[in-house]
Amino acid sequence: MGRWPRPAAFPPWSVVFAARVRLRGAILAPMQIAIAGATGSIGAPVAAELIKRGHGVRALSRHSEQHPVDLETGAGLAGALEGCDSLVDASNGGPAEKAARAVLIEGGRRLLDAAAEAGIKHHVCISIVGIEAVPLPYYRVKVEQEGQVEASGVPYSIVRATQFHTLLDGLFTAASRYRLLPGGAARIQPVDPIQVAEVIAAVTEGKPTGGRQTVAGPEVLKLGQMARSWRAIRGVRAPVVRAPLPPKLGRALRGGALTDADPDHRGMVGWSAWLVRAP
Image (cartoon, rainbow, N blue to C red; front, side):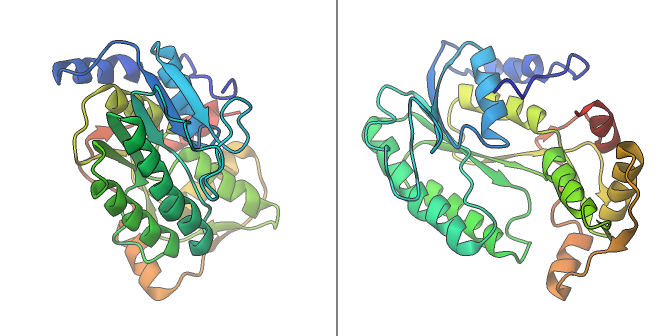
């Protein structure tokens, strides 16, 4: 969690969203909150934000020393949620459909059963903007995961976010090793995962909504624009080439399926500004 500090230059979102939650009559006393996938790209900053707000965090992951849990097999899950008030599901099964289903659907069902048995008062599911409109196997699994949460009987809230800055930075970093950067007209609305974590923490502190909230970045950019900005700021010499996509997927991404024109929460850190500040 130490690798997710919140730079002082970032706006104090925690203050803004804590105020919104108080207005909704949220539970403000310190809580014990379990996080599935607590060492991942969004689970880690969510854990850090909740600890900063004074809550107890029970980190559940395969690599946790105190609470090792494997959703794919169910190992370690029995009793892992006992004594917890709320649960944040930040688990991620990987991009392949079989692996995603093993964690998000089969593992998610185990997690929901454990939550019901432990009397969890609020299950917060982290999801992605545009999953119904993007023809990718992983996104179909995410749609099914949301439906499973809705039908579980456990009080819930779903938070959907647009693509993380860190994800796209990793994409360009990996591609640059082959001396090429993916470009094209796919429209992306990148968001700072630390600011997403602040929203998730505030939602977790509040009462279950039984619905969805969205978090999106402050700007919509084409993938090619993002690649050129990344190249300039990172000082990388590599051409930007149009990424070949299946026709249906290409139409969806060019049409803005991964964007949200009217999100419930809008990030304040743009792509280039984040790159300048990121390590």
